Image (cartoon, rainbow, N blue to C red; front, top):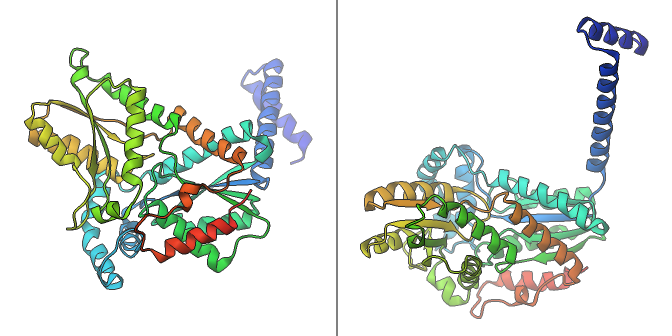
Length: 406
């Protein structure tokens, strides 16, 4: 069918539906606008990114079939956890834990939403960056998970294929820990040590951001949202428990900066809230028999109930998006099961930052300030723990000091 016949047929159909010529013109005009916008969008998407933002995080299985492999990667990563005869004991522990962990993921909908949230955060952040930093545009985000798809190696390969001119490694752990942030940085180093950096690509690092004011403001807003659910006459009695993933005491004693950086975030949040409520920093997700940093979140709830406290808000202060620790451990194990067991009158859990507008502004501000800073790597990142025994950490920091530049 040629164009003329197609137009005649279209007019005939519209006439039968009693669509007036003026309306027809509007339809054609709107269709032309939509086509133009679509073409502009495709041109933008096909344009090579100038700046790549590598969003680095632990990740999580998107379905229960991935749980076993996810646990295996964790249990065999010596930066994350150190076990005797790890090559044998790690796989055995992963296999043993898989059924229980699968069940937990089934109870929160079948998988982790961390990829969904990271994609949304990256998309919104890059959209804002393109507007406020046109000199470094177009920006494109890449998700680099340590233990689940999309894995770090895949993201780095994609960056090379896209011909990115400047890659910013942007840790999505606001507070730095050798077991989480450090493991991912070591993985990136190990990849480039073998493959080599793409030719003419600049590399820089955002390794931590625990005291960014918009991060504190985001958490403060999340807490305010939950305080509204308590009657006004008891609102000031609500205890705010900031809960973060714990670490082994041996890591703390080695000098891991994570606990102090989490505490710094907590104090900024409470400053934003004008210290309106009683609060405490507690720790969750202990694994294994070794001593870990406490007090633990569940034990803290038990202790406070004994002291006569009845109202609580849990805040996932070290997590930027929802995942198994928030949706199962905090929501189901603490806010439902434990609260019922202890007879807590009312307990709520503040949402993770997710796609809160202030948090997207925080991500955008952190990256844009970094791109203007001419500081590709910070002195703090280059400072190892006082009692560091990880040779891979030493070598990776040496490598980053030589290759990070603007």
